[in-house]
Structures are given as C-alpha cells and as structure tokens.
Image 1 (cartoon, rainbow, N blue to C red):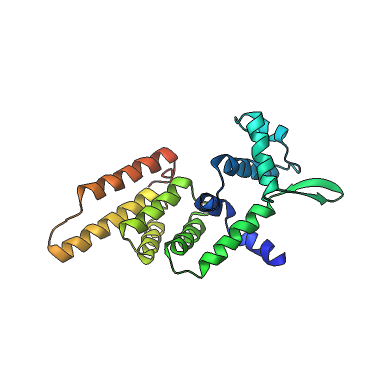
Image 2 (cartoon, rainbow, N blue to C red):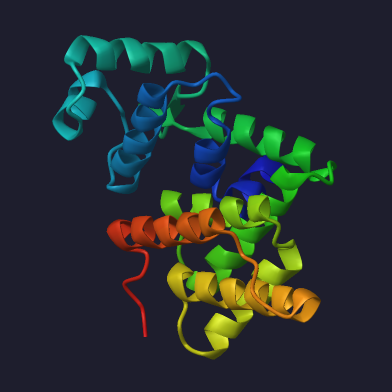
Length: 214
C-alpha cells in the first residue's frame, strides 16, 4: 500500500487514464464519471453519489447511476470507512493504471517513450498536459522525431521563455527542414506533412495551449 501511495504522488493518473482507457475497456462515460468524481473529492466532498454527480454533469440520471454502479462493480471506485464514516476512494482505478504503467515500463516501445515525454513536459510546464498537447506529442513521434529531439526542442523553447506547443512545433519543423536541406540541398517536406502540422497548431490554438506565446 505504501508503494502505491508513493506512486500516486509521482505519476499523473489522469493522463494514464486518458491514454489507456480504451485498452482497459472503459467507456467515455466511465472516464467522465471518474474525472468528475476526482474533482468533487478535490473540492472537499467525501462521498460520491449519483445525486452529487447529477449536479456536476449533464448525463442522464439513470445512465449516470448505472455508470457509477459499473465502476463500483469493477472496484475502480471504492466505498470505504474513513474516520468512522463512509467515504469514496479512487484508489482502485489508480492502482489499475499504475499496474499497467509498470508493465509497460519494461517494454522499450512507443508507449514508454510517450509516457516519459509526458512526464518531462509536465515538469517543465508546471502543470498536467491537456489532451491536445498529449496528442501533439504522439504525432511528433509518429512523424519520425526521436524522443531526444522532442526533449531538446522543449529545452530550446524553455531557454527562449516560450513554453508552449506551438513554439516547440516550429522548432521541430525548422530542424526537419534543415535536415532535408543538408541531405538534398532543398526542402522536400511533403504538403501533407505541412498540413498536418498546421492543423495541429490550429487545434492547439482552440485548446488554449498557446496562451503563453511570446
């Protein structure tokens, strides 16, 4: 138990939930109930009930109750006694996500690289990453940038006092162009690749992740 409690403080379980809920066969409704439940607990609530969640969510009451019951049956949300009173705990879902994380730690695959990058970026940004920022990092890896390049681009942005994904994306694009110029004497980046990068920047703008632009 102590090992888990230590990991709870070190690992952002919400990011793990977003990244892994599909492989864990969790529905989007279940994810939302988990996240809203966590919000309520952070606001000082101790017992999560369908009635409480109804005040915070637009989900139909019957559907919400059924979703909460499903999470309880899976032991992802737990009711336990605390200080002589019944209280809600999310340690069930946290333990499951950490177990999955530890399994993947031994695998030198893209998932491990992504999680490592999430942790580094969150440390530099001083906050959890948004969903769009998570997807942007994944797209960089899928495009062919290495983990070290993505980290170096972050460090350059930090040094320039421009800690945002749009600025980092520009750095990576410039490096890609320079690399291809060095190889062939001119830029050969495909139009499709450019459009993908432009689209990711537009999405980041809508998400608000570029609010710290220079």
